[in-house]
Length: 271
Image (tube, one colour):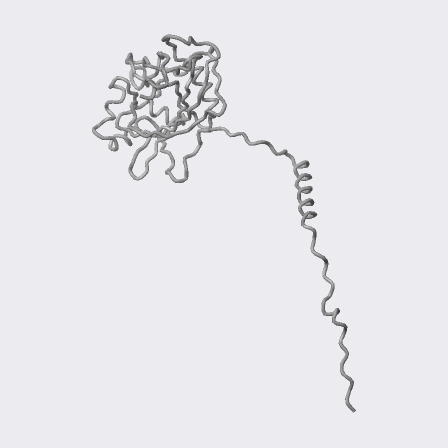
């Protein structure tokens, strides 16, 4: 006798019921709700980012770390074989130049970084440059400086100041105005005028030494405290006649004593 054919479950049993796919809009709504709840209960609420221009504390990892020195003598020993034509001997003796002690002080204070890359020695300085304009649109320019050794250094550039580590452009501008123009002077930085560019050339203060200037420039207008016509002069209040070695007759750095100012047309400034 032939057995009966096997019985199989209905065809629908081969397709067990799976849950329906989730609604995409529901998922997005749940995620947004979770983020909002997290931000409302986090210890420190989210803040808007403020874009400030800072002098970096450390150099780029692409460069070697800045060189350090224990004394002006150690700096002199390092520089002597690396500067051409014994140019170190001209520092502080040629009118308008600074001394070895000036450079040592700048490095010690973090105002200057001395880098050696591929046998090339470069002095890197971050500078705040302020184009102060009067009501007629003319720019205030420092025409020259009287130095502590009695020499005069020609400038023909807007108000500028070496920036300190981690100092913002706003802080550097305020310090430059206070030290070079006076405590009573008030200027206003124009919104959106900040700009950064790099110039590389031989240093005028330290002949024979290559210099890279990172210029953080801003536009500003006079609010009060300085004449908007003609030429005038001011006394430097930020620099001291410091003596790094402690000797009375030797080792003093050259400092700025007086600044001489005039208003010029922007077209003349770029020539």
